[in-house]
Length: 541
Image (cartoon, rainbow, N blue to C red; front, side, top):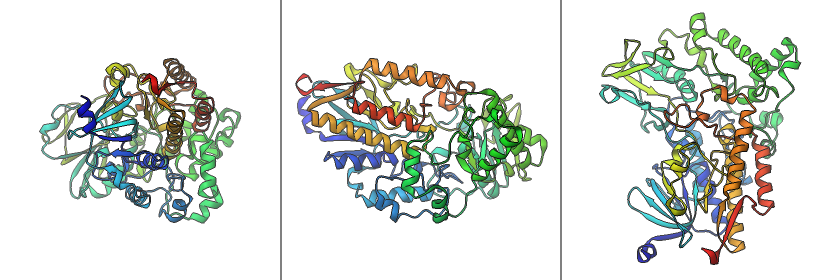
């Protein structure tokens, strides 16, 4: 056993994933003088933006906010072309970062990590890859992404389909041409809302299979005018400074009074102003939307009116109205021409809430006894969010305990950063942190910086391990649930709760307390000597 371990590669840290989180983690750990190996399953860097290449793929956070802020030189030299960056441009940016900071030599592409076990004798993680590779590391950082484990619905007959089928989260790298084809899109969440308008322009016929309508806000995308953006929100560093103390990691004005304290005319005028801003500015319109059902209903009514304005056929418009969950309790989408797409003669919508898809046939999809014949199927059915990419790796902590088993009733973390029983393991934007409720790049930088500082503290204090305590973890899990329960989020069957994955426990996974307050809590933890953690001295390994 000892001989085998000595023959393995040995590094200070292993990072799993080479997206925004993995690249920055490598940069920061290098800055500490730590030898680091990054394993990436894809054939290129980019993480989410390497895999998500579906038609219309674009970020719903503005370009000037969806970028690193750790390097002023990088901010100065990179130029975005549009207000909202498309997938290809984000990927090019991340490739530039990998080259700009010479990160590639420490990244192993086409390498999927299959498992990692903590060796209590040596206080090291023994990491294994699917190809049979081994590496021993003191620290293990899971930078696997919150939306990276694509979920294809378990529909009978899928293998029998004679055409091609795709998932938006793992799109082919070669161009997919739908010209002249009959195409089905299953799902109307974020990727469906983005891809449907683009596919409709190409396909001969498009059939949209919708279970739950989404709230979607016009992006108001346009070529990026940097000077105009600076006049509105300041320089990139000024924008980032506001984002870091905000609720959602965005620089927009937030929570401008109660929706119920305004007259109907004032409230509508304010929502119109937010709507003209485009994108996610709508989130911060009022202080009580996420906690008061009446305030939320006023915003829902505004959205319903907007959808009816954009869709010509009243019957179709009614199908597109979100009715059975409050605004903001599912992910709000950002679109370009989504609702108007249903005005096209070649687009139809099928409601699968009352009559779910029964099966995939060789020629198409059967719903309510009716077969819809298509040449291609696009599944815009989302991900096993927040936990799926982590539990896909067989992680074993103290005494061989399985992380997947520990999370079988729902994820348990301390601050979304660490797990009791799993020493020297860190999660980037894990469950229990703001993560998917925020601008991910802001949250990623905050997490990676905190993790790097914690590792430096362990090293400098001469400890062998840092590990979340059971008491700290229990208290944090209770706090995350308490904050979520004070809002309306449990009134929706959302992927925030794992409701899109059959058998997954219904636990609200992200932290609702906001980016700024959360970062302050993390800073207090570090300043207080990591009271929620146990540091194991080297001589007690």
